[in-house]
Length: 215
Length: 241
Ligand SMILES: [Zn+2]
Image 1 (tube, helix red, strand yellow):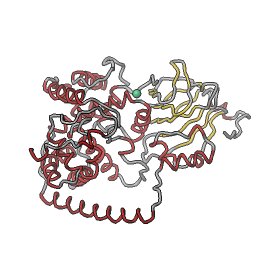
Image 2 (cartoon, chains in turn green, cyan; image 1 turned 180 degrees about the vertical axis):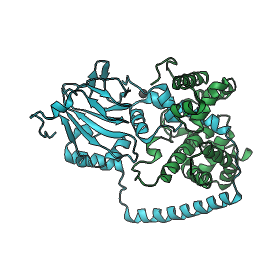
Image 3 (cartoon, chains in turn brown, blue; image 1 turned 90 degrees about the vertical axis):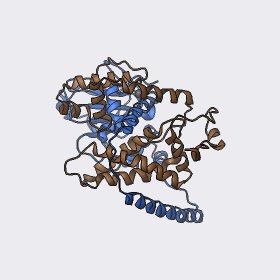
């Protein structure tokens, strides 16, 4: 990945009110590829596509919808990848990993695509109005970010299978807790508490009480 | 300072994109005011990113990439064209939010002057909202959000007004946009998020000094206790404001 080593230009490091964090990037080569895509580098785009397009397709088909046309997943790949090209400039490698950023893009595209399939109602809002995909301009230290992503990757491996199963239903298949409960033949309360316990185990809960009464 | 937030479970469903349009609207509105929950959603999205990395890899054809580059070529030639065009005309672009601010000034509706962008987009021109009076102190204007499951409305409680005690036939989400109201459980101020479930009744009161404007999303009609009688009340004439 040597050709992407110069990912942080001086211009980027001084943009906004960020503290100086010039030469250190998160241990995520794909973030650097995205930064190159922001500079309209087509070779970088091709590499990104080759790695991520199959995952976008897998993500899309993890939520099969009755009567969905077989071309839907390929349509999603096209839409997500065009957004990658157009929005790469809004990606900030100090604030999110490439995978998380791409997840938010694919999530929003999948929502829009499934809604568009349901043609008869006019849609005054797009998913981007309801789910932000761009990071806000608040300073977050690089150290904080990379530690979080390292901790998350490691704790993912120790997640009890019953918690992982539910988090996967929610985050990959985009299922509500009620839908997950129905599919897994579990009480709704169990799904809710496993979700909270799983998120706690992954250390992504910020100042929240894991025992809060689920609503 | 915001004291009432969506539950962890609701934020997880939202971060995953599992919540419906109407519920998501209520949560997005809260997020506009609440940096704490924005951070929480960001952290939860990392979980999504991690699962995404381990998604099944499904074959994508080479033509897909070719077709993408064709689209990119097209977009870039259009952008060059538009760039020349905008330099020539030099007209400012209209965005929904600037429109909303301009119209608000013109129509003197201070309570609707600083709506979160997503609400401003839905409302469009605030003077076109059709407010329906439900009681001397409560007005409702429905919003169209492009879904059929939930009723989405702005409600306005007159300063010092009281909403009749009501029960919730389903889930009801409320986000305070302006002013404040209270019920037996607490005070709800700008940005606060309230989730009522079936069987929970309350009778909200607006604070005495200002009108209270809220966004409400409900998946079943609310039930006013003894409200029909009140509807026949001769005081129920239209009151502008
Ligand atoms: Zn909050």
